[in-house]
Image (cartoon, rainbow, N blue to C red; front, side, top):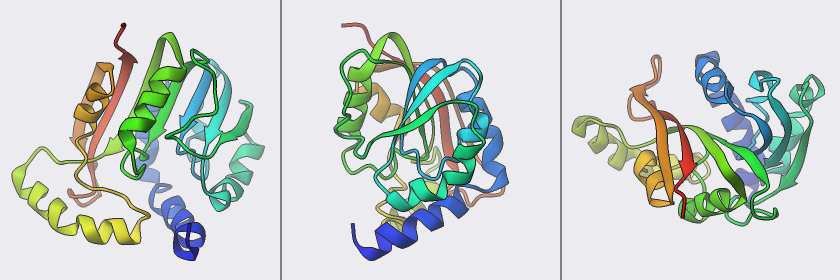
Length: 207
């Protein structure tokens, strides 16, 4: 990671993703988490205030040391044990069938090989486990999509490789998950090219 990605991007993400308008979505996506949870793209711990009491522990996967440092105050108030347990969502350091739930919030846009990361999540989930996500991605309307394709190179350059045009529900399905619940909408107060959200719960398709 270069200086910009290592020292600047985590601060930008902490500010941009820490705005109060994201809080209702974080609360919704965390509400039904249970047991042992793996969170990919933990960032600066913006989900910590929304962890429900049904969580036993969080294994946080986060590559940026600065992101983990920025999480310190939130971690100090957490009622759920959180341990930084991995750096790379594409290669999770856990045994098969380890976790009851997985969590991803505004993360799939940035992981270089998101398909590999989702396959890893599927591998480490127990039978009956669920993946909970809220992500921005490809908008449902063509006019907005055109702007997303135009602006994506700039977005990737300034936001640590963040893509605007990933079709998150399709990517999740292609990785072997069945979507149990899905809500797609534009986030109010956010430009549409950035605020086309998918919030859902999925489970691995049984082999």
